[in-house]
Length: 369
Ligand code: OSB
Ligand code: MG
Image 1 (cartoon, rainbow, N blue to C red):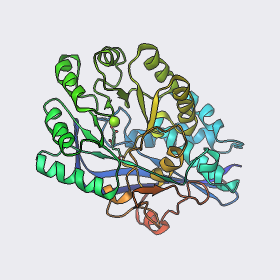
Image 2: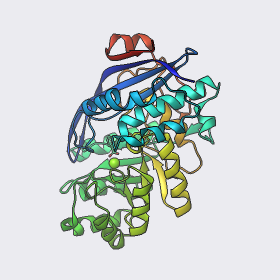
Image 3: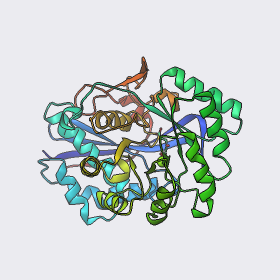
């Protein structure tokens, strides 16, 4: 097949409550939705999840838009696509820019599944139609308010809770949660806020029976993570560090982690994500699916991939209504009886609300002539 039309819509969804991490506060999620139309009239959707500021990793929404328009789209337009794995190969001439690549690559997978009349889950070897999921929580100053929020999430059915931490906000809130919920799958995510000078603080967390500690050190550090992992019983998980399967090989060679938070956009799309899943299975690294405050498009895709058997923990795939007042789908993805349903329709399995997209800023259109 080939692509006859490309559209990019710029969307902003306000968050229900501000999300505080070690690097800042987010009150609104800005993202783009990419629509690829084939000559057959099928539409594939992709989500560009990059943030407006380079604080999580270096990629940003404005830069990614530019890379898509000037460097990635020219590599796929006017070309016959036989299989979505080709996209990953064609994109190799562009270095890095994983989130930009993923936005296009995942839209091609969706399009391919729709053209061939299949659910993307079938192609991705989804093994179940419903999943337990976890929730990621920003920092909350008051312990009382924190415990109230954890209770609400547990009651709603979330089976794993992740709390953002930083030096000075770690053992106290985590101990309070642990005391009230002795058996909860609890973990912490530092988004690179620590270094080896905090070794004592990090070792103290070993007493809390955490499922894992995510990304305590710098996004490009493998050596200090390995030193820390040797000092801890709690498994370390890498997020920001892992952009390719080669990064996983370095982490395994050095012993930098025992778990990987896999985000499709952070690794450039589904093709690389599948390689990482295979590699982690071979090396007995616990892989689980992370999130980027996705709208329904990215969230539906996450559910499809996370329903493979290799995912050893509930993912950061909360219901749309955990973050947003309204989603961009005809039907939002909600928690039902403690589980999220894996959408079963063609492609990513959800219907995007066309009127909602049209209401938003169309930033770019390309039409085959
Ligand atoms: O570090 O896992 C992270 C969100 C955006 C960027 C980075 C991270 C996160 C989350 C939230 O923790 C995951 C989600 O629910 O989408
Ligand atoms: Mg993280």
